[in-house]
Image 1 (tube, rainbow, N blue to C red):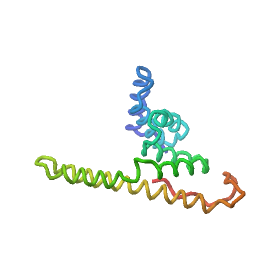
Image 2: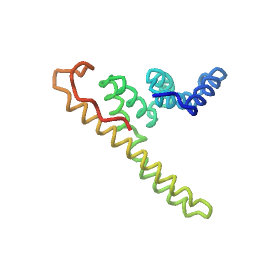
Image 3: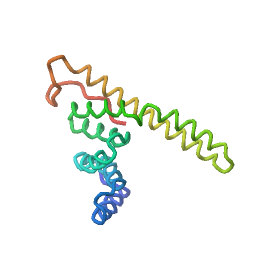
Image 4: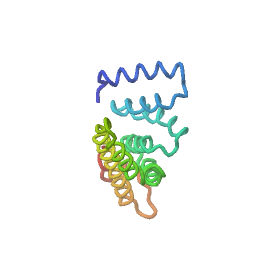
Length: 162
């Protein structure tokens, strides 16, 4: 995975902003996503960890954590975060609430464009929920009652991160 121009710009600007405001959660999350996209999963986890300290049930941060941990073959840790993401208050009702809200707003004159944004948001959320569910099923199928999964266990790889 290479460092593309957009990632480089996000990282440079983000690191500069953090020098001025090291507690900026939004910047930490942007950096976490940029580092994940270039394959620097430890750095992504570091920045995302700040987000989870501030917002421990933030679904996008939990999902990003699962993806990074699974890429680092830290399957048990990824499994715990996947379960947390699937059980967080934010995840189950979000699509229904968003659908209703955006549908109502999309009928207001001048707000029709929100309908496509709503549909895209719902598809992204549903894809994340599906991947997390598949990860949990995969992990649980690899476990025997008295065995913990290790990276050298010869187990099949988890489902690819979306």
